[in-house]
View 1 (cartoon, helix red, strand yellow):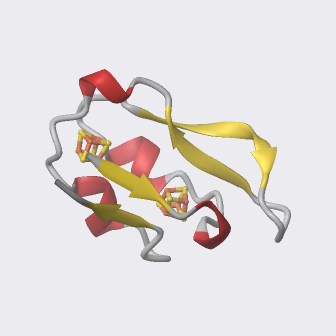
View 2 (tube, rainbow, N blue to C red):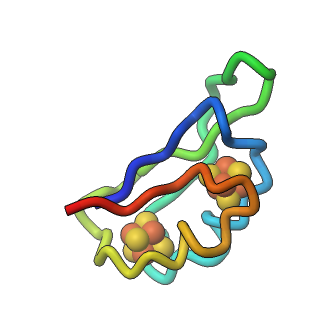
Length: 65
Ligand code: SF4
Ligand code: SF4
């Protein structure tokens, strides 16, 4: 599974674009810096490939077992 540190997210949407399973979306809510953050919209589709964590320029995504 992955975890998204919402306060580190800057809403660039790279993870949304690069996820091969289209798991992620940018939500309506904003973090304390005013950025709408990414979340797992369809977590059941995630295959834990780690691509989202690699492409995130702000290291907001981590993989865990
Ligand atoms: S780990 Fe892979 S499948 Fe899961 S959300 Fe990230 S890019 Fe998508
Ligand atoms: S790639 Fe990182 S900073 Fe960009 S939207 Fe996704 S979680 Fe946020």
